[in-house]
Image (cartoon, rainbow, N blue to C red; front, side):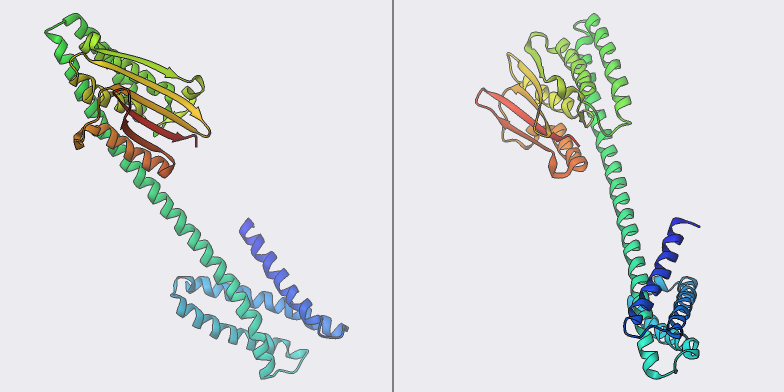
Length: 326
């Protein structure tokens, strides 16, 4: 017997015993009355059990609520008639007894139908949540697939610029690119990775870009040790670094610097990517990486995660990311 069946029989027997005990309070105890209500308990359990079988066989639970209410009313009346006929060996059969007998069957029906209504509602809610999660997974994978070719295109451009100028450095850059490719392919299997792993990609990417820009590109890291073991979406930092170089450093004659910082405050992980330059009012200035990152953060964490870009007073552009621990 399953756990669900055990609960069903426990509720059946205890429910009808409770019905009998309540009625005994209004009668003087005697052997005849005790036998009467014991018989009614057994009759009630048997009748409602076959009533349940009828509900399941006829698939009544799938009917519209109006039809279910009509079914409950008619069935409760018929069950009350049978209940009273069975009990007529102890008391006189009457219309009044039939009407009174309708009450426990209506009450039983409301509990039974109400339980299944809540159970089905719960199942529907779980199915909806699964569908929503599946939709988010599909959309996240789509966003990651958009980000990777964009990232690869920029990396290949960096190498192409080196081929004629410095073949040896170009060869080194290809090696670094292969490292990045290997890591990004592994990352694609996960929705979230350790910040430590994300920064490994960022360092390879910056090393690759440094070959291209040489002294025009400087970079440094200010990472809190505890922050390294927190999880982030793949390429969330790298996308901002890519933006910083493409929209900031590359446009400055003397180049500039990129700073990546991460720390833990309260229950959130804070990441900041700063670069020399100023944010213009052009829509494209925010970059594909920022839009993609904002969408991914929203899908994964809702309004608990944020990403904002702004100018600072030090002639820098700052991108701040907040990611919750859970």
